[in-house]
Length: 418
Ligand code: SR1
Ligand code: MG
Image 1 (tube, rainbow, N blue to C red):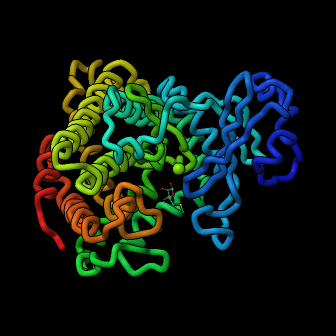
Image 2 (image 1 turned 180 degrees about the vertical axis):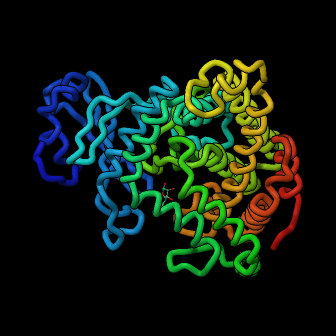
């Protein structure tokens, strides 16, 4: 590989990667037998599938600009370094949850990793009405394990603080979330877009000063609170699934932040899948698939809580809530754990409401709604999503258990908000 960064292409991959041992060990050194396809459909990066008679790998390279917008929006290549660092930590904290890494080149912003097959992006499955067995368990445990094991409940304080220092270099990436997720949806920002029929609903939302202040409070938490290392962009496009197995990809938005952030973003993306279903399903299949989605959300929180409690009991080795202060004094710490889980759910539901707004009002919409071409169908569904998002932002602390969230979604799914 050349030293200076150069964008890869389908044509140059064989010559540029053909002398790297970690790659030829898998694909073989006869590069003329390699077949290369560019498959990146995300907002930021190049992604290639490279196939040989021996094996298939994924080559992911960061671009120095936002792919979705073009080179008018430069974006640092260093995000590939943080993605690689995050993948290493996620594998350690939840083994088997992320793709295996074969090779990393910091200069070229390049990660070579396992080709997941027959996995496909979960969002596509949710739009197609396909169920994924074990999804809630995988995601609930992933969120709990990464939240707990990346925090000072588990880590040595000195290591955790050093890690916060490392990830604080990923500045431009959280800045995207800080503006696109937390700020732009709530005023007429330049890159915003929304379905035209929503203009009335959007105007009302943007004039709600109490709501805007609540969102800013959560932005402060997101930007300033370093509870744990987050995936940072945990939506259904960052999960690849078969019928019964799921893996988590793309942690380039990794940063330290509040424990409720990842599970909140994930919940939002399931809720958007839920509200968008009438645009994708026939009446006959609609109710049962929607209730599978809601049940998945409920079970994710149940698995999260159970795993978090298990880790609390068995791996609480950090400076927070030490056994010396509780169990060693003959004092149970179970109430403290319960209260922390309430705090995490409360944060999660607020982040959830904010993400529900962002994906229909700001830049980078999701296909759940966008794939519904008829705006007369799409707009009322998006309006339900916006209305529930607002309720979550304003009143998350009144939702005491996750089944109430599911009932709330059912209520909003019946409503007219246009
Ligand atoms: C300009 S980047 C837009 C979005 O793409 C990523 O997947 C993140 O969700 C980000 O907010
Ligand atoms: Mg991504």
